[in-house]
Length: 565
Image 1 (tube, helix red, strand yellow):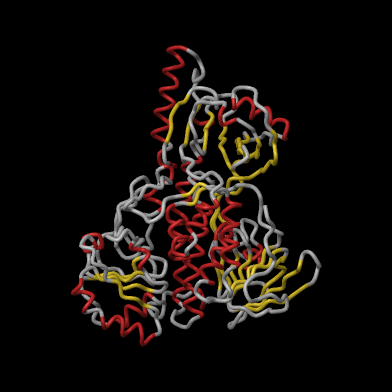
Image 2 (image 1 turned 90 degrees about the horizontal axis):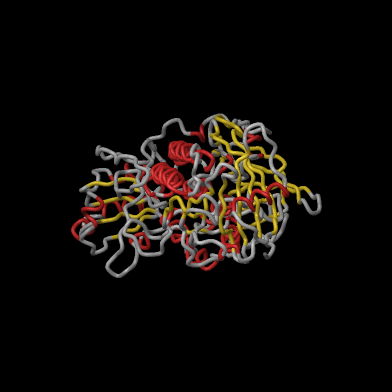
């Protein structure tokens, strides 16, 4: 795999120290933040202490909502083209061994089937994290206001009322440099140096389970079993409960086991033995790498102070079951990115930063609860006596296990209600309309234009997505022609305040029922900020709220800074 460039955009000099935003960490979250900012013309420097972030697959699922953000950025198709196994089905199979008896299966897990669906504009994508990072990196390199600096380690940072300075070291040369910016964001993972500098603690359960994942090259293994193609094979037996799956081209597989409490992590030789037993027959293979990881259930006490903020694993950690982690971090980057851009461009107010934690924390808590619930039912929890026995006794045991799998694991693999059904209910920059919010569900997503929700999707008559017509700023959606004719006061109020706002009035008769109102004000991140059957008497006041200029509830930007100097 090609090594990343150490610089990008127009900022080619290591001494070009001034920028708008410093992003610490060049994983999917940091790169997504850089793209969200760079597309809006905001200058940012991304510093990453490693030459590249990593080769482990780690996260492999890009959820529907994440792919919709990529579509908005114009890079969804680049992700599809980078897929090492195009067209490979995202099925999940449970079996006694890879070459044993099948117990249950979930087809089209995570809604990755490419068939067009009315509920969303982009299907999910199964792809190794390192491939996603490569696409994000290449996209960021093409943005003139974004500079990427690998082998660049943050040493310390300090903030004042007007900006942030960061001391960084070039890892290759040992040279020290000072960067200055208006804001700094720590997207530097679970061991975040930015979080440590801020003195923010993570609360919850630390390292409550150990896990080991091996990356294995196994030529021809996919043809040695009759389970059918799948991205995960859960192995359910008393000897080696585990998970494995095809990871990449060239016969690359992953194989993961849970380490029992009080036991040492298996070494390469033991992992090879366990893999052979999980397969259930002899096979030629080579262990390429082994990754030890710990399951956490943690959230930061707060997500930032003044001009320094956290995103992704730097402020929330949870088990990977359900594939939420990377997707949650990218959503953090989107939420924080457009708000920082609004502040820097002068049309956003301080309540926008206050709203970042208020919006994202409840979503994080819900997802953590889901991930922990899923992690409570792992392969070892599904084993029952007799599951590998031949004959009627074994058939009965396998039937019982299969039924339990289908009942208990559906919430892990059918999750549209979590992925699309979240809402920013208590946000200070959302205008409530007095209606009852939709019920939270896991498996089922029912579109709602209740303020704070993701704007309901629609495929237009010309085959385009409704989302394709939303602007990069706010969009005033008029669901009928008469409403569009009367939209002048909102447009004029936005113009006076310098707020980017586009009027959208598609000739789509289904819109009125879908949105439940004649007007809906859509934010840059495609959430509904306000809706109504008529424009508000004071359109400017509504704009001031949704842009963070009024309705301030103890803005975080006004709290005393806690960052170490």
